[in-house]
Every structure is written in structure tokens, then in C-alpha cells.
Amino acid sequence: MLAACREPTRLKEPPSDRLQVLKVDIAQEGAADALAKSLEGVDFLFSCLGTTRGEEAVVAKGTRVLLAAAQKANIPRMAIISSVGVGDSGPQLRRSGLYGWIAYAVLSTLLRKVKADLTAAEELVIGEENKRPEGVSCVVVRPGGLSYVDGDGHYEVARADGTIGTSIAREDVARFMLTLATDRQYDNSAVSVGANAPRVYKKP
Image 1 (tube, rainbow, N blue to C red):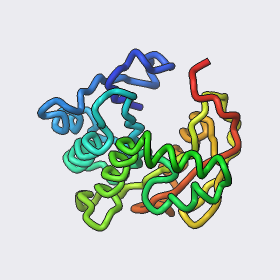
Image 2: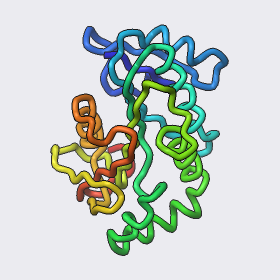
Image 3: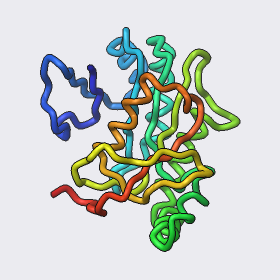
Image 4: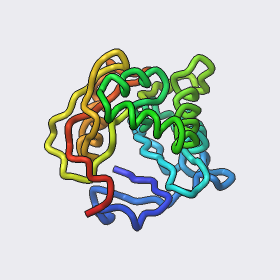
């Protein structure tokens, strides 16, 4: 397994025989070519790109790089992280009650740049004007509010017309994403995942 990171020091699990770590600057010229060489033989590419507060938006830009790398390395499938409330899942977030309405308002105002970046990334892979290369399929994963609690493996999965919990452990998002390696039902579409995890948004 290979983990390509902008900041490898932030990984909880250190490099080992099971996990190789590659530092990648997605803003650097030639990043797609460099990634493609390292990703040869990979069957599935998982993207957990996110923008740190105060930094330039990176998700759409990075997704372009990953799509190009996937094409060059002949990787047939990938998944990217977005957020519930983006795209056609806005009503889904609001249906979750008062917290959902508050979260939607925050996403549309204080976090509007983040939302615009995620929307642009989704458009690249599943939108009408998508830039997905031929032979590369993609799943957009839209988690509810991400929590730092330990995951327990219990979560809800639904398309935008369904219902999910409003907060989910990061570990459980990862668990769900790993199922996509063998489950193709969501290919080239978006799916939301959530639970009722305690809302802990800072590392303990």
C-alpha cells in the first residue's frame, strides 16, 4: 500500500513493510508524471485531499492532478472525499434537522470557498462537464460532520435522496471507502455516509 501525502509527518501510522509513504507536492509542475511513476500497478486510488484553514484551496486542483496520474498509470478506479451538503446533497443535509440547517448555512457562508472547491472537484469527476479520462471511473464520498472519536464500524450509506447521520468518525469513513475497492455500485456517482458519532472536531 502506498500513501502519497503533502505532509507525511501527519500520518498516524509510520512507514512499514505494509505502508510506503511518498511526499507529493500537487502544486508542483510535473506532479502528475511523478505520481504516475510511483502508482504503477495500483488498482484503486483513494483521495482524501482537504484544504487546511487559511491555505489556498487544493481539492479541485489536486483532483485534476490525480485524474491525470490515474490515466498515465492505467489506474481504472478512484474515489474522492467531498462533503454532505455539496452538489445535490444540500436538501439531504437540511433534512437532518436543526443541526443540518445550521451546517448547511455555515457551508454556504463561512465555508463557501471550501464548498466551491469541493463542488468544482465533484464536477471534474461526475459532473456533466467532467474531465474524467476514458477508462477511469470515480466515486464521490460525502461524509457527514467528521469526528475524531474512534470508529465502531456502524454507519449509514445513502444517495442524495436518502438519509444519513450528521456526524461520523474519520475511521468509519475510511472503512466505507475501503469497501469501494470491491463494490462498484456507486461508480461514477456520489454517495453520502454518516452516523451519530459524538461531535468532536479537534484532535484529543
